[in-house]
Length: 599
Ligand code: AGP
Image (tube, rainbow, N blue to C red; front, side, top):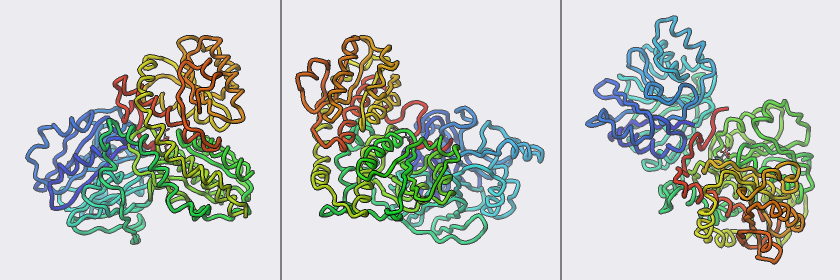
C-alpha cells in the first residue's frame, strides 16, 4: 500500500512526480522520496512526513531532468524515517529503486549481500533489491533486474533507473503496477489517478512481468524472457472524478455520489426485467456459494448471504478472507466462490481467491477497479463501475457491492427459469432517488454529530439483513473518528453488551420496517430502561419509536431486501460529520491505507 510513480519523457520529471505522488497519497503517506537522473548522475531527495514536505525540499530546486522515480510510503518494515523512505540506492549510487510490497526473504538476501561487501543502510526489506540488481548489473538494467527478481520471494511493484541508461525498468508480482502510455513520454504508477493528467492509455502489468520504457517506446516480457502481448486500456475516469468536486473531502463526495454509482452499476444490466450479466458458470450445478472478503467488503458479503439465500434458496457461507486462506477449506463439486474487493488488490482476499481457485472452484469477482489483480484472477465477475473511491473509508463501493450481489441473485433466479419479481425491479429503479433524499439530510446529520462528537463509545444494533449494516456503521465511525464502536445483533445485546448501557452510551438502532420491527422496539425499550441515548434510523416517526428514540433519522421506505442500501447512508454521514467536527483527517485516517496489499 505504498504509491509509486516514475516518468521518462520530454518534460521535467520533478513536477510530474510530485503531482503524481499527491494523487497516490491515499495509498500511504508516512514518508516520500524522489530520484532523478541529471547529467548521468542520480539526485535523490527523501523526506519523512507528507509529500508537501518533500515538495518544499531545496534539493529539488533547479533540477533539469526528464527521467525519475518516486514513492510515497506506508511503512511495513522499518519505521517511517528519511533513511527508510524510498528510493533506495545501490552501494555505488548508480541504481535506484522504488518498491511496493514485502520481500519475505529479505533477511537471507541481506546476509548474502553483506557477505559480498554490500552495505545496507536502511531497516527496510526493499533496499536489498537495489543491491541485488547491482550484484547482477553489467550493461543491461533489465537483465540485471530479471536476475535479481529470480532470488526474491514475496510481493513487489517495482520501478528502477540507472544513471547511464535512459530508461525505466518496471516489474510486478503481487502488487499493482500500471504503465501510462503517453506521446513521447511514459509513466509507471501504482494506480490510475497518478497518470490520468498525462494519458488515458494504460497497460496493466501482470505478475512476473517486466517492462522497459523509454520516452517513446515500451516493451513487456515475462520473467522467463518471453515477450508478453499487452492490451492498452482506455481509462474513462475523468480527472475531476479523482478530484473532490467542491466537497470538503473525498469521502463526502463519494457518499453523495451514491445515486450515480448505483445507476452506473445497474446501467446495461437490467433491461425490460431481464438481468444481463456475463458470468462463467453453470447455474444449475451450483450447490453452495462461498463469499469471502475483508472489512467493509465482508459486511456486504454478509448482506449478500441474506439476499442470495432469500432469492435463490442456495446456501451461502461467508468467511473473512484472512481466515479462509489458512483454513484449508473443504471445497466440493457445485461450490462457487465470490470474492468482493473494492480495490481488487487486498492481499488476504487475493490469497484466499488463489487458495480456493487451486481447488478447482469457479471464482467470481465483485470488484471496483477495472483490471486490478483480483479482477484478472477470477473466471468472471461484476465490475461496480462506481468510479475511483479515494476516501480510505469505503462508502459508495459498499452500496454498489450490495446491489451487485442482488443482481447476481436475480440473475441466478432468471437462469433457473424463474420470473424476476416486477415489484423488486420497480423498487430497484427508485433506489437512486431515495438515496438522494437521504444525502440531502447531511446538514441534519451534522447537527446530530455535534451532539455526539465527544462520545467515547457507540453501540450499533440491527437485526436480520440490517445486522451487517450495524457492523458497517460501527466500522465507519471507528476508522475515521477513532471512537470505539461495536456493531451487534440487537437480540444479542442482552447476552452481555447491555452491561455497557448508561446515559453516556449512544445506541444506534436500525429500526426500519420489516418483520422484526416489534422485536427491535423491545430492544429499544431495554436500552431506554438503562438510560441509553437512542438514535433510530426509521421509516416514519410512529408513536412507539418517538417514545423511545432521542433522535430519529427518517429514511424512505423500501423493500426489506433493499433496506441496507438506504440505511447505511445516514450512518456514513454521521461518522463523516463526527470525524470532521473533531478536526480529523477524514480521507486519510491514521494507521489506515486504502488498499491493504500486505498480510
Ligand atoms: C473500509 O472502510 C476499510 N477501508 C477496509 O475495511 C476495506 O473495506 C478493506 O480493507 C477491504 O478492501 P477492498 O474492498 O479493497 O478489498
